[in-house]
Length: 560
Image (cartoon, rainbow, N blue to C red; front, top):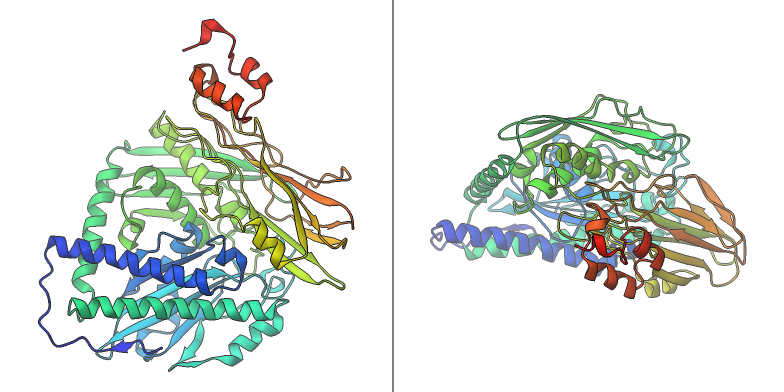
């Protein structure tokens, strides 16, 4: 696609305050159309159905101006840094109209080799005025596939350094051939990479049309406005947090042994600095997290609580600085294995909430299920396939509101519908249902988790990668007297328990049963509204025993 255009020679429209706000909102619309184009074009169900992606508009300096509403913090916030990292290797002066760059380097992109970042420069009057970037998950790029079994990133799949995916409108078929030759699903891998290219082309066209409509030769004035307003909003929001140092710790199952995450948060008037020193060192299996992915989710946690009304862009992200010495599980260095880096990364918002709860008691939500349970099943023999889906746990209760059930917090993605998953692979989903009492009891109840049972539809053996099954030992904590959410549980229909993050064989005729963690509760359950308890009991969200023993439903002295 031609991304080099000339703005019509009519007089530029004067950009007053209202016009700048309109343009800002229309930039976000450009990003959303870009994301929707990606979801329509994607081959992999994890992108097409679940929205595991990101899309954004960047100015000529490589600074993020706007992001799509659709997308995950791990993709969006890493992409905010990866654009400049890519331009450091291939600068704008080396780019021409029709060029597109790509990489899946975990330390430049979104933290593991399955996520490809595609960057498209937008030219107006023969100069770069903006960039369109997008990221999505490619199901298979070789190596050991999606598991935590690799001992280095070299075993996890092919890594593509920053290079041209397209040069002067000519697609780099050599690059695509390298990826497809290494992939178990080559047709899908090729299609997903090209869908990233296509969605950027869509966004580029819409951005050029927008600039032409307003006769803009660049985005400089609009960039300044967006960043100034974002800085103002962020600074104002941070004022409600008392200056000081706040600390928190969090324990995860880990792979061979528990993982400890530690944070020291320094709050200033206009920014926040977080030091993750004291966290466990990097481990020998693929649950390590590069610092770019760590920073993405830690920043998201802080912004979700303190600045939810400030749009996500370079200026609002710059107010949060995440640091860690090299070599920790949160700051793993090449060649550490990182396939399941989200096990660590998606726990970081809860770690940030633990710090902020000390600064803002009674204002911070309880812990959530955290790591997205990635369901990776494959089969060989007469029916070879690879299936990737997600299974969702409960979100922690918030002050004044029950936690959301089966909600992917903090990633925000949805699950692939059962019907789509069954069409794409020889699997049958026998059940998918809420688990009563899984949400932590509290004045405000934690979100419920789910029970899912799946097996082969043709009686074959299945292989399971259990890398992302976290919080099996202990459920998410409640706050202010709220109870813990239920811990997760994984087992086979023959009773075999799965208690580690390794590879497991599911015998022919057996099914896999997953019970995800529930969200923590908020506040003492004795103070829960009686009508809410009765409603939960009527709908089957809690058991009669919990209603009586935990919520004291029949205790007239405690009804408040």
